[in-house]
Image 1: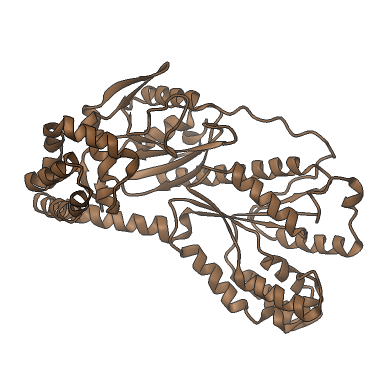
Image 2 (image 1 turned 120 degrees about the vertical axis):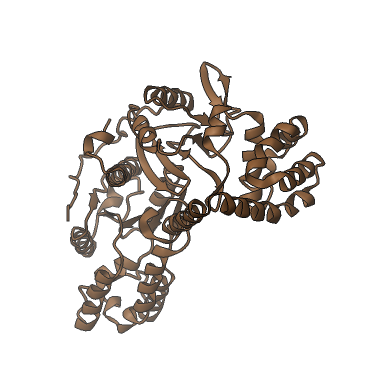
Length: 472
C-alpha cells in the first residue's frame, strides 16, 4: 500500500496563502461555456431565481440527455481552479461535489447534480428529450441559461416530492399552483403519456383547487397508473429499469462505496474536537452529509477503566493492562462494520473522534500479553479508514510556547500513535508548534487532496478511460 507522510513545517505565525475561490456566477458561466464546447444542451431544472449571485437551493441541478454523463464530467473537469471531491451515481442522476467554489461566504464547495431521467422507481414521468426540447432561455445578469418550460418545471417541482416521497414541498407550492391554474391544458398534455387522462386530470384539478388532501390522495393512483402503463407499453424495458433503480439505490445507500471516512488521532481530546468542528464547517457541500461519529462501546470501556483505576486519562497504558479493556471489543467491531453498511445519504464524509483507536494503540504496549494480542487482532479486524491523520501533540490549540512543552511519557505515547498510523494506507503527521488555524488549513488541504484523488480513480474506473481524460 502507498504510504503518504508530510514533513514537519517550520514555526510560523501566518496562515498559508488562501486560494482564490470562484464565485457562483463565475462557476455557472464556466460550466455553461464548457457544456457548449462539448456540444451539450442542458438546462437548470429549478432554483435559478437568485442566479448569478445567489443559489436558492443546496445544489444546482442540470438536466442532460442519457449517455452524456461522460461529456458532462469532462466539461466540468476542464474548468480551472476547481476539483471534484465527491461523486455518487444513481440510476437516474450523478451527484458531483466540487471544491474551489464559494457560493456564499465561508463555503468552499458546491453540489452539482446531472440528471438524465425524471422518474419514480426507474419509471419515467417526463423524458429528458421532451424537457430539453421545450426549454426556454433565461437571462440572469450577464448569464444566459436554459430552464424548463413553465409547465415542465411545475410538474418536476411537484412530483419530485409528491410522487417520489408522498409529500408536498411548500417551497414550490405557490409557483406550482400558478402554473397549473394558468396553463392547465399544457400541464395535462405533458402528464398524459405517463399517467393517462384520468390520473392526470385528477391531479391537475386538485392542484388548481388548492386542495392539499386531494393532492395527497393522488399519490397512489399516480404510481399505479405510471407502473401499469409502463409495463403495458414496454414490459422488458420497464422491468429492467426498476431492477437497475433498486440495485443502484442499494449501492448508494447501503454499501461503503459512497462513504469516505477520516480518523484523527491525538492525545488532546479538546483540541481534536475543536479541529473537527472547524473542518466540518469548512467542508460543507464537499459531500451530501458531513458528520462526526462516536463509538459508544469504546467510550464505555474508557469510562469504566478510568473509574476503576481512578485516573483522569482513559487511554493510559496502565489502564489498558486490564482485561476490562477488551470485554466489549466484539460489540465494538460489530458496531463499526454495521456503520459501514447503514443506510445513508448519497455521499457521506464521516469523522471519527472517539478514543477507541487510542485505546487500542496503548493496549498494544500493555504488560499483559493477552490484552496486547487481542488489541492487535482487533485493529486488524476493524475496517480501515480512508485517511488517517495523527496530531503529534496534545495541546495544538494553546497560545503560548511554554504550554507546548511535552512530558517524556507524552512523547512516548506520541511515538506509539505515530508508529501505528504509519502502518496504514495513508497517514498525515502534523507538528504542533504552529497556530491552530495553520494546522486546520493544512489538514483541510490534505483531506481535499485525498478526496480528489479517490474521485479521480473512481471516474477513471467508471468510464474506463486513461488518466489524461479526466485531468485538467
